[in-house]
Length: 129
Length: 212
Image (cartoon, rainbow over all chains, first blue to last red; front, top):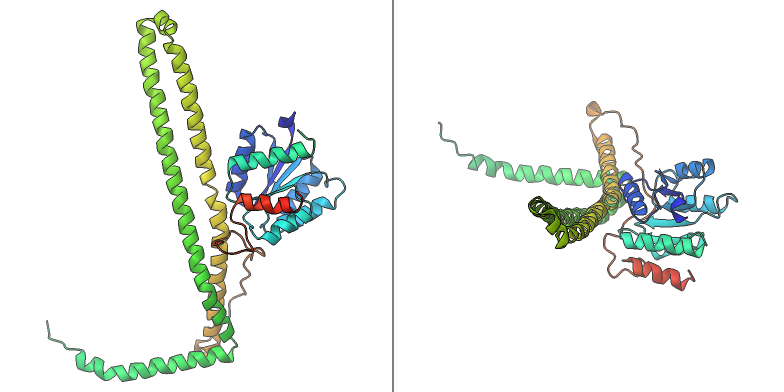
């Protein structure tokens, strides 16, 4: 059931996209696509179907906050949980993400257990698991 | 080879050199003030220690990542060596007496040992993969330092152009517009800063206090 969920990983660093993708795969979520910034992510979200977004914040063209805002104001996308995975560690950024509707927030560097825990927690909370 | 003593010449030239340096310094100061760059120079001076701490952060992170990877490789290789040795040992037992090898539990023990060692190797490989996260963090910090260096370079070029003699004048290069992250990026030194979190538990506590 949960293994059929489709993830979109958004990060401008290919290394980090690959790490997140591999960790999700190890956790049983092997269906994932990648986007290198918010703009590309938004196009993919509008042209395809995804169940979960894992997004960085500090990216060129469209950052993670802007992407989150676009997702939450789009009736067709706003149900998709967005987990922020970022190096931004200011408290005001965390609060802003929460207020804008982020489902979770992870600061880099993080562990496999942290990502797995947050993803499973969000999926359980939203009745997706 | 002819004997040559430059001392008298040097001492004779010293006051003149000092005067020239003094004049250049004065000229530079006047130019900076005239061009309104004094404030910018002060800003650069303030940013340079920050750039130094960012470079130290990069050195620390890359050093830690390299050490982590080498340690994990050492451990993975030890597990791999164990599997290789055990495989040879069980192979000999099976060739000598296959029934006894199974009956005495050697084969089953071997399977369990290999399974355990394989899991450990897999964990080491995951840890090696996770150690590569330094690329993202240091990349963001490097972008900021490069941006600072580019800004200083640009301003110095402008200064040279505007203070150069007319016959040496060159055309100003096109303005450089680097990608400037609007956000802070990784916390290089978060200790004692109440505005930032330093680990995931603080993020979770903050979100919990907001009802998440």
